[in-house]
Length: 182
Image (tube, rainbow, N blue to C red):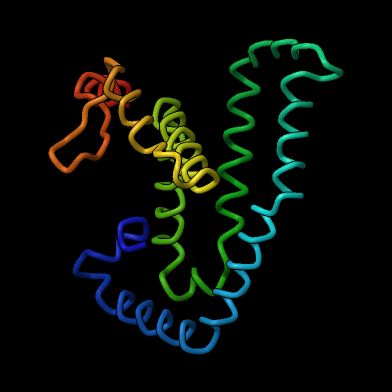
């Protein structure tokens, strides 16, 4: 939150203190209720019935009526730009007024635009989806040592590099390519 809303700069000290205070108040008054809602949502979302629905929806999307799905045609550039503007507008409109009053309208707007721009990199989005999928598989199938299997698969990829802390990171070639595309 500090990075998104630029609360680390010196001129944001007062706002940062207010945000910390509000966090503590919300945690003290609604912490248990929020945690319960999150736990209920996760339990419902990962129940056997819901997983069966996810699989049915995936199967129907990939193989409608039992045959492979027809690839969708490439969208026109203008259509992509209209969708991009609509998505940006939706993100900016979804900011609660209370947050704007506490952090500041301009700071909040810049923060949301920063988040929006983070999701405009296809390679990073693909990596994000893979990480989510890997974590979901590890949660759904505990004890199958999927972490080791996934790590071995990453090691075989020419685009992957593991650092000394055993964490995956994008190779320097892709990082350089991403910097050049900005």
